[in-house]
Length: 283
Ligand SMILES: N[C@@H](CCC(=O)N[C@@H](CS)C(=O)NCC(=O)O)C(=O)O
Image 1 (cartoon, rainbow, N blue to C red):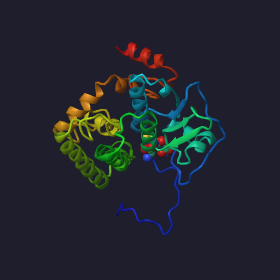
Image 2: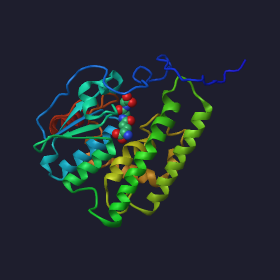
Image 3: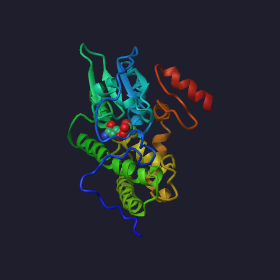
Image 4: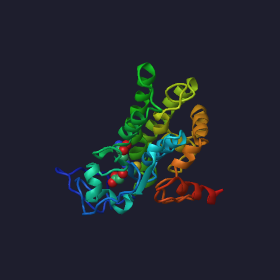
């Protein structure tokens, strides 16, 4: 008897398909329920969760605040994606794609909404004039690595991470395919970081801030419990870079925001003290 899957003529949605995210995945977009988003007191309102895509934005905001930029003050509201908050009418209004993170900039006369983490990093870096060179080769290098991350991380998260950690069964073909791609990507990063201190050269930038939450966390053993399987210690240059970035205070602060699991929990951030208190309790 064969267990091979034979696709039907027309695919039909099966709500009980198993896997960690089966209860939230649907083949259609749009809101499932009416609910407005909360609004805090700061110019920037972030709606997010402490996954790698969420960490990118809170790390950048904490880096900007560390530079003394008060206009980067933000409220970080929790959008609990396992409880379906990304499908509320309020969230869908600011991100029709129902994925965290999403940002509303309320500093001007008309609120500006930004979705897609890469677009938010670019928006904030341009708005405040930091972590992105103004022009030329340096800017092109940062943008190239930023877009590299946006195109590559779905193979790590949706491909490798999904089949290695979350799928209802271990499918050898899928795990092999995405492990090979993940290791190829790590090798790309390792070769670049053998030549450069940071992803795009000698300056820390939004390229590092985008890549670290995925590939930095991965080689530091913080993602999918896959460090041994992927032999992450062999990527020595990625290890050096990941450790160096992890030591930045803004990274320590930003990476815990909107985090509802693990040993540091900070569901929402509305002032600097929220983070300071949690870090104090941990130390
Ligand atoms: N390309 C998007 C991806 C965002 C994304 O995949 N977010 C995940 C969490 S890391 C999410 O919100 N998932 C909820 C869902 O799929 O329903 C970005 O970079 O912002």
